[in-house]
Length: 365
Image (cartoon, rainbow, N blue to C red; front, side, top):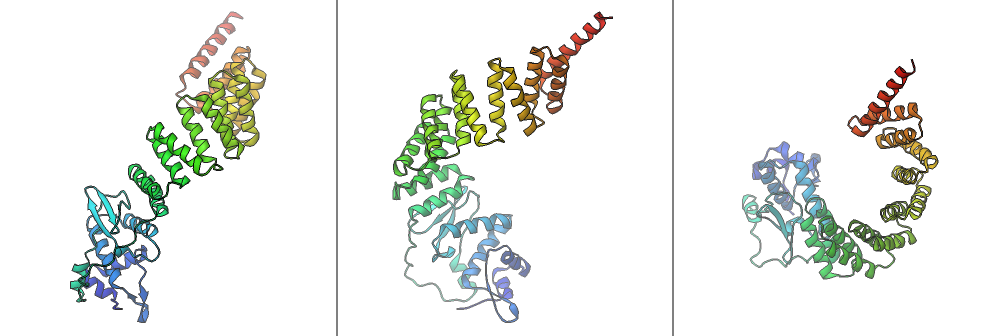
């Protein structure tokens, strides 16, 4: 196999030697070391360097290029090299083609183009054989699913298409159904989301995640009974029980079932003693029922977990005002404003109490 030194590569590609070394340090290439520990580059390394040069010339950061190459390497089988792909720009997208399928390895708007013949001519290598190489194997269902996972953060629509490709090859991939359902849910497409969550349950009945996600979906659409049923299934198999109980508490509260709401919030706290929101909602529930004696210590728990909880301080102030404990109420409204100066309700209550206190003091003289 022919190898090239850093100086050879720099001359062939018209790149500064320092920039080539930077590419090696960035992890794009892993050249062997020859005599004197000098880098020895292969022809495939030159192809990657030429691509990198074009991207750098377009002011694409090294970190972005490294992320794209790393993504592509993870998407390919172990025995397939990056240079076996055709990578090209399709409008504003970069598309990879393996001879059978095309996909977007990254959401970056770059042109990746391995110009094999141009490099071969410059290094005086024999041209590639006239017969076309055998096409690279198409992606498997799991590889499409892995690609979709990588695309989720940067390009949800491309991720959806990749998940669909995976499911066309293997409709039993329950994780792909769950993830695709979540993407549809985030895109405000509940019908499609529900269909994929139910498909996930069909293919993996013991998996609690689609039950939990279905519960959230039904809760968002106001279908309380269905949501409660699926939260119950999630709890039954032990998935995120504290959050499930908390969400059930919210559902029961919204439907006026206060005893069930208090029970659910209490179970959430038992499972997660540091659950600030569960303490707060349970305190609000007791406060709404006029049970101040139970609400007060719960608000104190909230403040113990989060001293800057303006709402907890404010609600304590309201309770103390109702009980005629005006100095305590003033202290809590003051703390609420210190935590959140924009909490106008606390400011109104505080000004009113201070004004009333001033009038009472003047009247007592």
